[in-house]
Image (cartoon, rainbow, N blue to C red; front, side, top):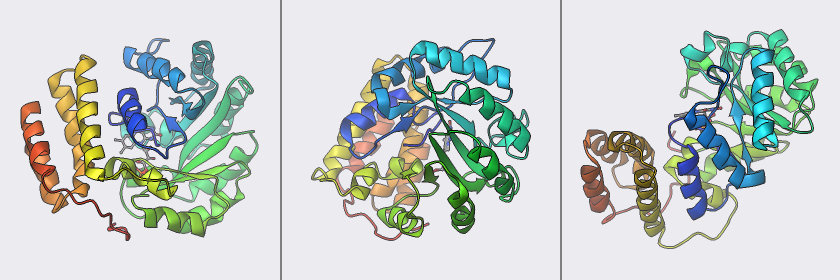
Length: 316
Ligand SMILES: Cc1cc2nc3c(=O)[nH]c(=O)nc-3n(C[C@H](O)[C@H](O)[C@H](O)COP(=O)(O)O)c2cc1C
């Protein structure tokens, strides 16, 4: 399961993983240092991640070796055994500070950062999550030899540039040429929304070690189980409903404000809407909801007529 800031925090992941099967490994949205410490939210993510054990990796975002070192020292103090470096965040607020994908045009700086991180081996197994470049996908070809110099446990590649943000063509062909040159296990990520998408990527690149899925899980929470050919619950609509109810209850019990819960649930339903007839209209209805009661009314009305058969072809 991909890290998704704001959407897939520890509460979401705990509820999701308690209901759906198929996910082997999850990542928290990136944590960072503020004044030398973690924010309360990041601290909660890291503590919650410990209870997941081996199936969880904390993700960090950093630009300088000293920042990376401080983050790794803290992760090791928490008892974590893995660290993932974010080289993919496309938000200008990060990239202009040479964080996330902002580092991709600077292979020498990526190298320094990885040198620092890999000094924490074997206490922390180091992995990377990257895009192809900040502005140009060709930036990746200079990064491949840098990545290959380090004993990375895995590299997750989202074959877009940061400039593309989250849409536009995924450069699978280029991924096929360049990521194949990487010497560590490669995980493919990007627009895997259906079984058809997943099988296409697995078939085209049989050398990859796995798939990472983000929005595809929000859209079809059964997708990892479908890919792994696991038995699915029936009817699926009951499980979806249970997921919604349990997530809402978990958010409410956590003390999150109603407005914040509403934002999160509306964002999730933007994706879950695709389980229902006339999905764009359903998504628009969620956008207009202004209260948690309104949200529940809409959810109640939807579960009277869910679609349970999934498209086999990607609509994207
Ligand atoms: C709302 C949102 C928040 C995200 N937050 C993170 C993050 O904290 N760290 C990260 O590496 N990627 C983050 N991503 C990127 C995803 O992990 C993933 O690489 C991207 O969405 C492409 O995969 P997908 O098409 O399966 O969603 C985020 C994506 C979204 C949509």
